[in-house]
Length: 94
Image 1 (spheres, rainbow, N blue to C red):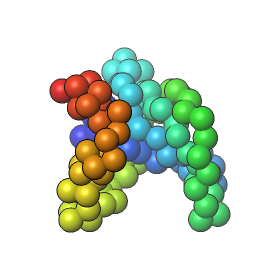
Image 2: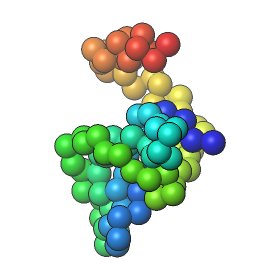
Image 3: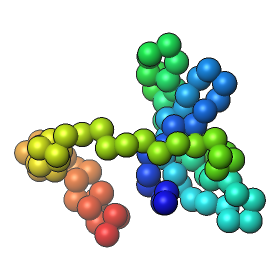
């Protein structure tokens, strides 16, 4: 079952759009997606984030793309680099 925050791929003809779920419209069977990049001809192109409403049947979940041993590195990176976003992101998500 998909939930807000999950990464998805949207089928749009030959092009694929990559984004994450912001919310669901239960009445219309639609999903609010924040689109962040496109994928076409084996090439990912970043884009300015755009909110789009998509039919739920057009989206596919993106599987886990990081190896388990990379998770610790992803957590440690903002701490080591003293990222100003690390504390704010932790506060917002909890």
